[in-house]
Image 1: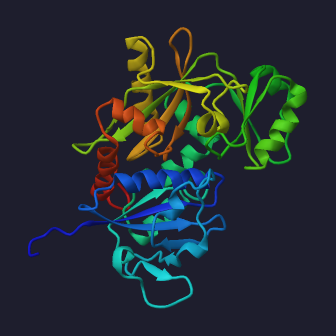
Image 2 (image 1 turned 30 degrees about the vertical axis):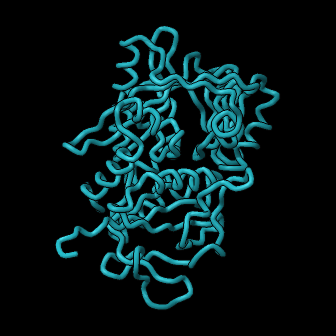
Image 3 (image 1 turned 90 degrees about the horizontal axis):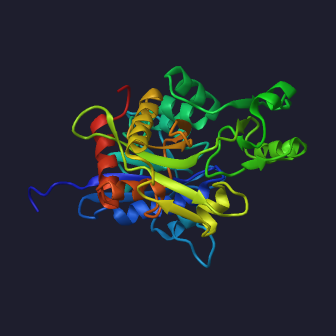
Length: 367
């Protein structure tokens, strides 16, 4: 029909090589269901655990089946590559041939719903920048800095934001006695560049430290050992503004874990029902305001864009301590980031639409 506006061509990128592969697939399924088919022409591009990119004809890889989490497999579609050349056609069959047309032909924007290394850490963002394709979320530097918890904490400290005591244990190193005295017990041992609480252990006795470090190193040779913070676990969503520069914070949420581990590990996040969420968090008005202020400040300190979830602790005297900044948080309809924004007045479909339009507005390249 003459004058009909062309739909926005959006590529959903999901799966990936990290241990958060399945969570990424579930997030992509949620986003796909939220997209208005009258507005968006969607192409599904999965990355299997080996790193192969697959153009998928349907959403079967995004749906859990028979109690198993979803996974991208090369047999589900056509293997493709993205050309890192902004002057060339963008997508080609992996085994050679002409460029791919249709929904994947010349996409307007990519939504990289990838969590962890090789996706949330600046690697995919760098490829998309090279290809000249706009994408949802933070750029190369902010993605890399937020993924590496050591450098994230250093940048937050430089911006005057509070972080808890920690030490870095690199490959071949052990935690020094001086650091043990400084951190005290208990401590939390985690991969420096991981997510979804995979590989994290709580250590209540130094005799258990080596085992915890080994568990973390199964995911990352660089390990962080953090002092326990006495306080309540609070999360806050941050979202870029469409009507101008800057960002805004959502209603914060509180996480209360009643599982045997006593902390918000993978089991508590995705498997068990021993976690309670309060949205908004049951904090004083001044503490709620401080959490939102710190969340936006952390977002800006790392030069984030689009979205982030900022995790903090609020101590008994209402002091706010930043724990982590997640530049691509879980994005299923029941994930904390969309739920916090729903409580703040932005529905899940409107949230997805806003993020895509932010990406289109900002484009690729330096901002």
